[in-house]
Image (cartoon, rainbow, N blue to C red; front, side, top):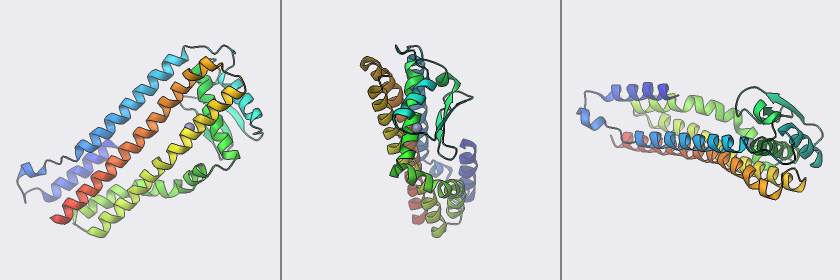
Length: 250
Ligand SMILES: [Zn+2]
């Protein structure tokens, strides 16, 4: 990803090099990309440290992530969702197409507050799916457009910059906006899944009141990574708008 930015920047600078002094090529808008990158790294480090911390705190119930998922899905009357273990770290997810809660080995068989909290969050997604929660449906519906948009937006935009061709710049920006929209819709989906999960942990008695706050801290830290992803793609979009604006004045 970063490499492709460099290629595009090289193409952009290369196209105008020689017509102006070298000092006018300092593109301050890179600061926006670096800020987004810093935010993402910070959020990811914050999440990893919260997970590490609460992976060492055992739930008094002695229930594993898998047990947690079984109890929550049963309590929520969600009968058609399977629970499986997946390889890798922090690979926990809910797959609506196969109707499976996939828990990383760390969450599946462990009895920590982190494992239980993460399992509850993924069950939150399964419950959203069962209830046809609107933001989840919107997110699934725009995925194909987002995939195409995020692949084509920068190439189209860069060609637009090189030839100062406004329709291509606009097309690139619109396509990139889809990716930002996706991050925006992801936010309520994730926050809602956590709040559903925490509610179930409380109502089923899987965690004690004083344990809930540990699980909440893990899930809040995870939500921050989605906030950071939204912020960095919004910064990228702002950068495109600035570059397009500067290009027009030329
Ligand atoms: Zn989630």
